[in-house]
Picture 1: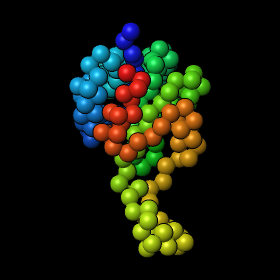
Picture 2: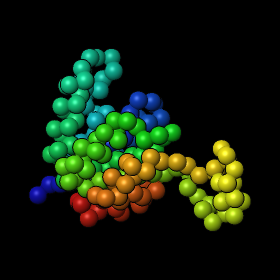
Picture 3: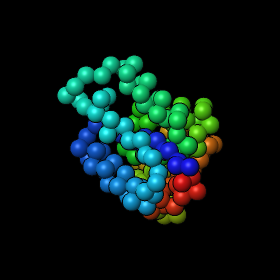
Length: 159
């Protein structure tokens, strides 16, 4: 039986679109039988030169998400994309496993004493921040990894 996954990621800048294309190609190359729903490929709702209202977008993406066996969620950015966070909430409520990808390089150096001491000074954190509520939702029903290679390993059991 073919497995189906939902790829949740920000998709509004050229950088985001290019990274999504790269990551989707990596996933499809490794898991050729996986049916991967990628919202940015859905031109009927995501062609920004055309028109799709909020209900059309919500219905199409939610229906697709609810038909999936698991979700891949890119958590990168200054904050988790609000659409991705909403999709995570829908997946959580539906009991759909979630594999999050958070590649922010500021996670490194957790044992560096100077970085740890800087936490005591206002506005001097050397580490990234990610919304802990959303992280908790992902971890309750899945996992979070920090590289594309680890993502491919983490989704293997679902494929």
